[in-house]
Image (cartoon, rainbow, N blue to C red; front, side):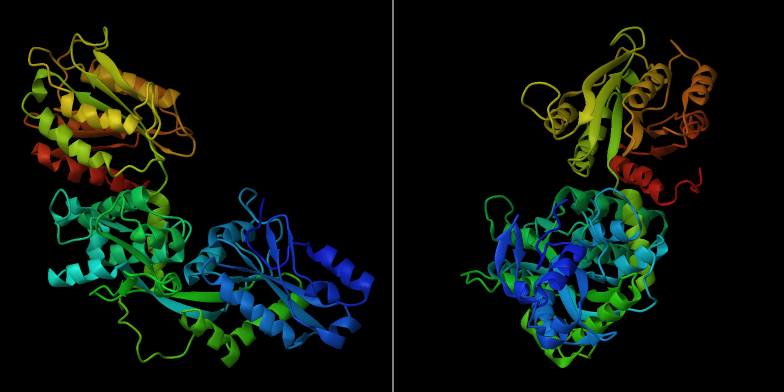
Length: 564
């Protein structure tokens, strides 16, 4: 795989053979472009390096800190620093933390060709996660190279507009408007707050931690966090540069705000603009990203050389480069530092990363809508709420929809309206599934003269999801129903028997039932859901459907230890 932007692309063994064969390191002073990789001077090693084979140290650095780490490596290499009697030469490569993590813990897919000798991540959370997942040869400590607080960034003109309306940036803005008690943002609020992808960037992990800290724990906090994760997935971005470019783009969002490190705003504003991006601090206090250096080398001599570079990065010359690049110093106190939210500890950040990992995997979901007479007067409102819920699913979702009532779709009383498949792709024609589903939420109607085929429909839907099982996804049958079956097909006990026979713990499909109205058979429906480790949620009013839906998704936070 391509290793990313870096200062040298030859393997360690190849460079050692070159150095030995030529007797000097003059070749390292040549600039060349080869295979898309950028080669640059790694420093004048002088007579010391010419006398003996140098110790070559490969450092993987997060995307935003890599440029300054590269400049620091050039300066360091000119110092002719020695380790174990040999000079040290450092090369820095730009690498996403997740790729380095996978490499260190021994995964085989999506990894680097070679294990790095040092790692500068964009959050200590990555280092702690690597240790928890069994990464070998990681020493107990690490040194902080730089810091940068998270900020809410927007155009200066929008910041002035928010100020006029007395709108302060706050962490609750990362949640969809439904969590804040309304269907959509007001004109005085951002119409979108985009966050970095927590699976790729430390700023995203910190944002999840701040979101969890604001809403707290318990059932209500879990539902709010679930809404945040769904909302963030739909609008997250892979890197800070593209997020800030979106702030300048006025063709889609009218009032965009992005959560990024302060340094990325300073870097973005190096380009002149009539309406520059400004950094605003959340009123509750922010989270500061640290950029830790950890030695990852397994060879003792290389590990010593890697530590030498780590020590140099904490010195005056390296820290001056850090400040020039827009970062704050690594470990010294700062008089102008923003207020840090004190309740977000490293443990809270680690828990947030775990929560994201449980909530974020994509969903393969078939939605069944009860269109029997029992839903008359309720279905329209319920589907309108479901329409809002549809926005919480990212484009990685697979989704389909069916309806059930007596006399439709054959003997089973089940009819497919949208086949199960990628939500961002069309099933047929030109409209993608998301658009078709959105339209159906406004056109599907209950049939006043038809009874319910609930039991038969659940079995049909369960079998469809099982047949289309996706290993990398959460596979779910979601049933909207008034909770009654009119006895024209499978009995309750027969349905339970078949579900117990057919449910495969190696290919688990969960049945989640969202029931509302009078006369819901809670005990019977609970047994159906429990047969697949699913859940039943009852809403007294159709408008509560979003709340109970989020509660169903939030069960991923406690699975498999959730209560009934």
